[in-house]
Amino acid sequence: MKVLELIFQMGILFSAFAFLWFWIQLLLVFVIPVSIRLPLRYFLQLLHSLFLGTLVLKFLQMENPPLNFNGYLALGMMTYFLYLIRNIRSRSARMRVEVYSNIYSKLKTKNEWEWTLALLSVAITLLWVQYPDTLDGGTTGWFYRQTHSLMEVPILGWIFKLFGFFFVVGTFFRFLGALAWLISPKRNQAPRDDERFDEFEEL
Image (cartoon, rainbow, N blue to C red; front, side):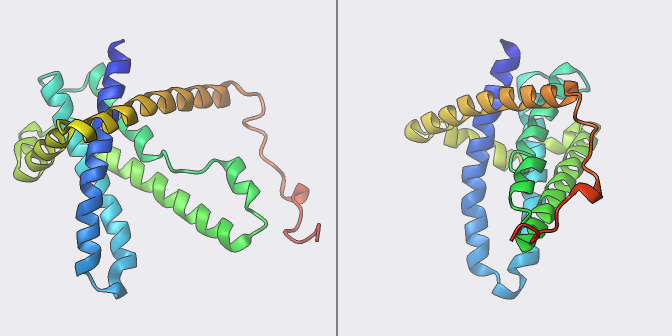
């Protein structure tokens, strides 16, 4: 039950932070020139992941002090990682749009960026475990206070809790999917290049 409770609480935390970050990003979009919005989008995604990582550490530190490498931290980081890769499309989903080569190329690039972002964010976040005093800094403290204030707002708080429930369910099914992939006998059978059809062969 403690595992489900932690995932549920982190789901609420993620939803509150996403709501807060939405308004911050919207404000930045209005004040930043159009010419640099595209590269800025990737930078903002990185900032979003890193700020969320420090917020997760702050949450774990407050819930189970002191912060150190243990099972509680491992579960928190695993949940954080699953949240970061939630939008990555599966290989089967990519194959369904492969006939549209331009869409497939963009989707593949987006997936590669999402994986890189998730792994980099988790690695940097784990480094901060060695320096817990930095979690008391102004930025992390501000995000922690604001997200908890949002959780206490009556209507928003219920919405965040609803998201937390669905996050638990989604995490459970994602875990089952990963487990099924690991035990599947076909997971190492990659399709051969000579068995693939040309994109317009059927047309």
